[in-house]
Image (cartoon, rainbow, N blue to C red):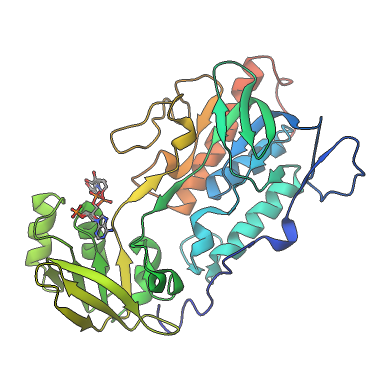
Length: 358
Ligand code: NDP
């Protein structure tokens, strides 16, 4: 992105180095970290298991922990969610200056642990929600939970180019709302032909001098009104039949290598940034046998954070394809934890009314 921003790329691996947690059993010497899990061998029992460790999962953990529920968070093998791939975050309330995405997530994680959340950096393999306690398997351990909060998020779909990965956070982005501001008075490109691409292109005209919309075909999935609006916009230029072969630049994006999908002709385009808007994939694979998904593959919520299974709650981008913001995901995590706590109380699983204020 631009000079004043995104000077650092988040580290690719083990972003929470100092926070790694291991599973230990009761017979092991108690040398685990502050939130090490002590269960009976390969089984861990918890009142609440939270799956996912982005803003939704960690906020749910903070709230559940402060309600004395000692939640277990199955944080994933690449914990922290999409903000781990973001550099400057300027729209999360409470930070006058930008905070780096990984720093924000490390702080949320430390806050969740401070109140007794137990985090394990594993991906889940499968779940069984047929009866309570609900069962979740992850790397050989069975987790049993009276209530589950699913906060597995959604992943942006990328083009899959090495150069795109290398320059992510340095001019390559998948979120115009998050990063558009960094492209004031710059020339940029958006890739995609659906509603998201057109919406992002339109949004980005607030900042950029020019927005090139690059689409691999000459017909669009986007609604006609969005296409018409873009075609009429003086700052947007639509390039049909155009594929991105490479993102160019050493330490930041300075251009794109494009091909004409009809003729195969190559050309270069000078831009300071590129927004990939080719869709998101909600992380729902493990739950599809148990819960409803909508036509776009997102989990269906009932009554704010509930699912069709009592005791299974849903928070964040795994159900929300509309807002997809860290702050809305965090709010959702808060709501899910409060709903879970009240549900456990109503079921007689926890003592009535925690003494701790939310
Ligand atoms: P879509 O799946 O609708 O569109 C994805 C676009 O990306 C397609 O044009 C597709 O091309 C292109 N694409 C996919 N993979 C690649 C690739 N590897 N290389 C190049 N191009 C690629 O996703 P959206 O995110 O745009 O929309 C998702 C849903 O959300 C839709 O139902 C949409 O209507 C809705 N939405 C509604 C909005 C609104 O109403 N305001 C705003 C945003 C989204 P191709 O067409 O060739 O397959």
